[in-house]
Length: 104
Length: 104
Image (cartoon, rainbow over all chains, first blue to last red; front, side, top):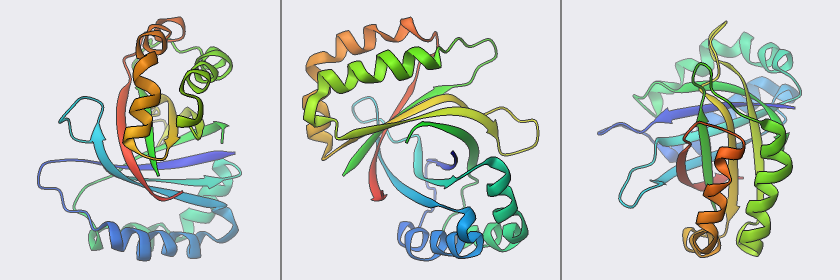
């Protein structure tokens, strides 16, 4: 199994609508990807590792798929619609990473 | 619920022993934290978002706890031992972030 981690850097003054992200954006991703998205998780950044340090990422999601190929086949055809929804909740450009799930 | 995400930046030439991390380090964390660590997950970085781009993080773990306070009370007394184990599997300094689990 793999996960696609979408990480939104926490910049001063960054705009991020966590409610829209939870209630609209990720349900849209799941609806479009169908079975290629096995499940997903959402994180809201609270704090960094040192006292008073902000979180590195204002939000993250992790989308689980059987393989990179299944993720891409599910996401690719809907990429324009899904990416086009991003300005509705943030002005931050996310960082994307694919990982192997070693312990899930 | 919160998660502590420990993220190891993927630098050229970085050393990371994924087997030790899975079989020794995280079991040590769980053993020392006890019930304060509800569960954990481990990721091994595969790729970035663009073709040929490396993963931002060579590895990540996410440790789940009921609250920041429970995490700290479980981790704090064993911090020296747990952090002292890091050189056994990597020469990379991790980035730590605490997040609220919005969808888990």
